[in-house]
Image (cartoon, rainbow over all chains, first blue to last red; front, side, top):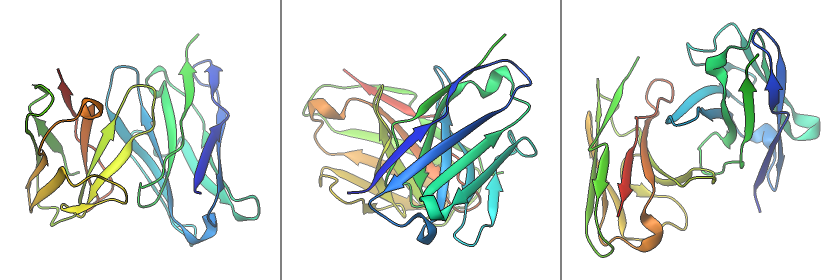
Length: 113
Length: 105
């Protein structure tokens, strides 16, 4: 059974950094491209970033230059390094398989002073 | 950037009724469009991919159609568990989502 479990969310001050993780089981992460998607309070879904199997990456304009997606295939885990966080980055962050047919339950990131 | 618009914003229906949701793209996405169902406190669920293909385990009452810039998600007869927010997503250039349609009672 495919399972994705996010971790690393929490309360952080504006300008701070946070690293999210997505632990995958039931499939080999190295064979799949993977994405992060977020949902701000009261808002819709927003695609954030994607990593292809060979390491190429894509980012939404809203996070480009501040967020970095990466994968640790040896641990079947994906990460999202978030720097220079802003209040508007407050959201539930979901990881999803590249085809978006499997999602984690999400981890909440709150950026506030 | 491809922008998706969804209409209506809210659809008020009763169980057993047919729901027709629309998604329009600012430029052609061919058939690279997906639909998701999202309930509060849960992860989104993929319903339809490539405009008209049902994802694994999705009931036949859900169907998708369209190509180019205009797409439709139809729920033939609403079940109580279908009341949720529905998002379209284009996968032609990047992966942007539409603003969503809330289907409520």
